Length: 216
Image (tube, rainbow, N blue to C red):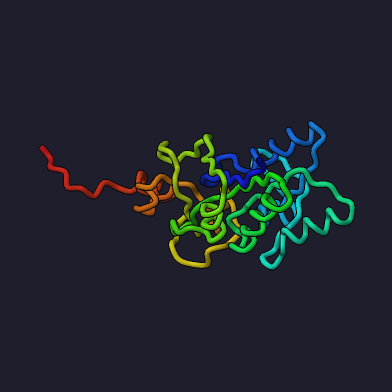
C-alpha cells in the first residue's frame, strides 16, 4: 500500500542525505521519481546534502498545487513512481493535503523530509499537518549533537553568534555560517532554554572568575 511518510529530525541529522539515498536506490531499480523542495540551501530547484551531494528538484512555492503539477506531468506522458519532498516544513498545510491526495488518488509513495519545530520551538504549519495526516512518522536515527555532546533536540537561530527567539518563522540560513550572519545551531533542550550557544559557552569559559576567593 502506498504511504505518506514523514521523516523528521533536527538540522544536521541527515534528512536530505536520506532523501537522496532513497532516490538513488529507487532510480537504480528503474523507478522514476519527482522531487519537490523549497528554499534549499543550494538555491532554487535544488536538493542538497551537507555532505556535498546535490540533485535537481522542482521548486514548490507556497501557491503551487503539487497534486495538480504531478497530474499535469503524468497527463503529458511523464512518469512518476514515487515522490520526495525535502524541506517539507516550509510547505503550506493545503500542500500537505495535496501530498496525501497523491498517495490516495494516484497510488504513489510520498516521502516527506523536514524539521518539526522552528527556532522558537513552535511547530511549522507544514510539519503540523504532516503529523496529522502521515501514515507513518519516522524519527531519524542519526543524532545531531549539541555543543555539549548531548543529543540535540532543538533548532536555534543566531545573529552574530547570539541566539534570538523573535522574528519571522522562515529565514533561510544554514549551520556553519560566519558568526556575523544569520545562522542556525542545534542545541539540547537545556541549552536552548538557557540560550547558550557554542559561542556563548566559549565566551563563558573565557570570562574571568568573578566569585570571591578567600586568600589563606
